Length: 103
Image: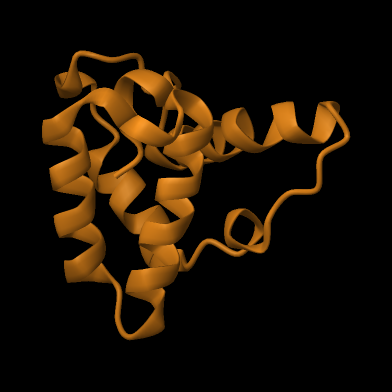
């Protein structure tokens, strides 16, 4: 079983690595995830969502996961970190699923 920190790093690397390998510039919101976002990934990094924890597309399409992540970010983060976290998550999901599925 993966440790929560490894899950968080896997999710972030899974989303950022393809952009780097294709020569794209990683947007600032993906480079600067607030620490509170990591706390939410650790808290929600369980297999109960019906998705592999590194399957960003599956997680982003999972309404229950998205709602839980949004609620966690609003609980764990303060001030501008809430908006920054949600924007970063939205960007990752948009990349994984396309604009219609981003939250």
